[in-house]
Image (tube, rainbow, N blue to C red; front, side, top):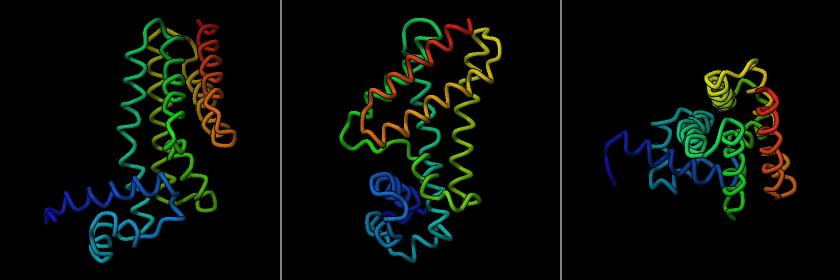
Length: 190
């Protein structure tokens, strides 16, 4: 077991990512995270003051990789802006067909913490969603689309709405339909 504090913290966060995403934050105990990370509970609490801080670290660790993946799907898409926006939705639908897919970890965590709006993880989730909306807005603005902020908000509403309904129906075609709607919104704004 490495004694490097950075590596130990990373192992704890990686264990939290795996467990919290697959089982939900309320169902997973700190003991379970410590066990999966191969550390004592005391070591876990040395790195994180509370389970709440660990939950926030779990989401924070998913922030940049999630944003980078969306940007990659956007950049790799052929065609013009409507096609690039739709590609994000299409790739999420492909991911949603994987048996281990459990939806958006940020939305699921926010739902579990709905009664605690000041929770540090809710703040991390809100910041993540804001960064994504701002990034979409920037792409739309760079493409010369008028009213990019409103259009970006509408795209995020379609995306997160589709994430939610997919969890209810377990049907990725909802996000594909939302992608076509987002593409049509962008086309009509041109």
